[in-house]
Image 1: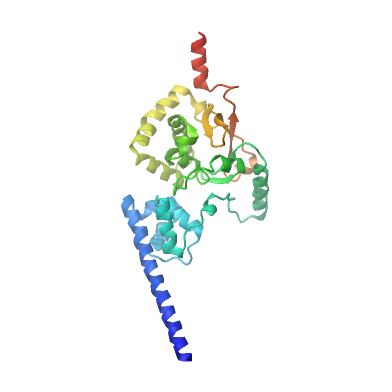
Image 2: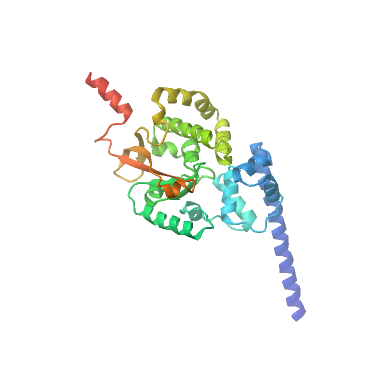
Length: 306
């Protein structure tokens, strides 16, 4: 009897080991297949992940001690995976589906300094108490902190592997299919964001994240033409002040019933404590369009009055 139990246990272990091996082989094939589909070298994916080419090569060969959710989400973004492909990635890597609330949850910048970590924690609490959507970005426009009002504004956005607004605001405005439903007159928002990308690259030309966004812009014919031709002409026509954060009033559509379209001014208000950490705080100042006019509406209003 004891021998039978041992044999059954041995067979179960063998079966589990076989399943694990099959999943590992599928994972390696799946990751390499996505990179081949994008026609990108390992160095390009490594740059998107901000890791060395050797480290990414180990990922692709399955030499990973532990697949954490954050690492898998980052890989899904770098390989431009759909929601279904991201689910497959998790199933192959850790044997379960992803936890979508983890991706949407606010996250604080990682720091080894206890004093800095305490400050950022308190700053997050302070931001959550504000009624206007506000968020903190790094030089590559990765969102490091976002308050509840910001998360609520984009709560209806569908999951996307590379362009969630709580992950990178430039990628959201440029690449997310839901962006036009919130950012009214989306082409003008895109021009402004392309100008932000160009301005950021001038200051941080070696940043891997910004370079990856520019590469993705070049892979979209319409965005590439806008970046190389339309955006420079737009900057010359509107003036440099509209390129930076203290810019024109644009419009967005809030998903909350009864609110609809509102004016929106993107305002930078970064304290020195965040500046020293290399972060920028932006606030979406929402304006009642019945009380104030956008620059475009002001022009139309002046022409009508004349």
